[in-house]
Image 1: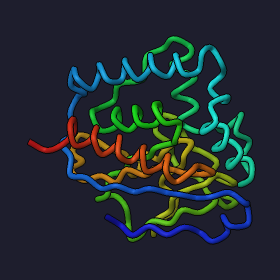
Image 2: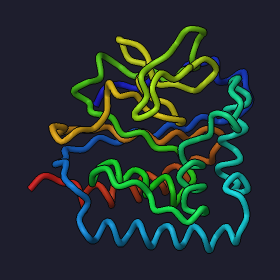
Image 3: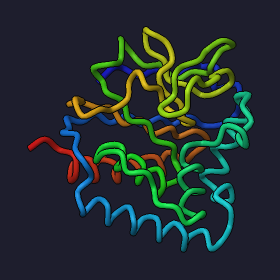
Image 4: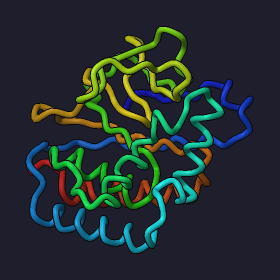
Amino acid sequence: MPPLSIDPRFQEFGFAVHVGALDFDVAVRPSPPGLVTSIEDGAEMRLQELLGEAAASDPVIANVRAAFKACGKDPSRYRPSSESLTRRVIAGKPLYQVNNVVDSGNLVSLMTGIPIGIYDTSKIEGGMQMTIGAKGDTYEGIGRGAINLEGLPVLKDDSGPFGTPFSDSARTAVTEDTTHIVMVLFGLNIDIAHVEAAAEIGDTLITRFCAPD
C-alpha cells in the first residue's frame, strides 16, 4: 500500500483527523445476491435510525460537514459522499450498483456516516497525502465532470489530487481490470473508535464479497 501522510495544517482547524487505509487484493465483478441483500438491509436500518430526520442530522455526517466548512468548502453545495448516499436512501431511491468493490464501500459509508474512497493502487503514483485543495486544483470526477477542489479535504499523490470525501477522480477509479485496492476512511472530526469500527465492517465486506477466487 502506498504510504499515507497527513498535512499538519489540519491541526489549525481544531478537529481530529483519523484517516484509515486498508489494502486488499480483489476480483472486481457484479455484486452477488448476498451483497445486494446486505445493501438493502443497510438502507432499511439507516431509515430506522434517522426516523424521518434529514441526513445532516446524523452526528457523524454533521461532524464531517463541519470539517468541510472549516477547510473552506460549503457542505450544502459540496456534500460529504456519506450524506449524499443517505439522502438517496431517505428519498426512497436504491443505491447505485457499480461493482462488488464500489458497492461494498458505499455500504460501509451508508452504515457509518463516514465518507469512503476506494482506489486502484496501480494508478496511484508514489505516496498519498491527506491535504487541503489549493486554488486551481481540479480533477475529473466519476460521473461529475471537472470538480473544483479548492478548500476540500483531498488525497494527493505525485501526480496531483485523486480523491476526496466528496467525490473521487476517474484517474484512480476501480474498474473490472483492478486487482489491488486501497480503501480510505475519511475520519474528519470523527472519533477514532468509530473509524476503527467502520474499518472492521469494510474488511468484512471486502473479504467476503470481493476476494479473488
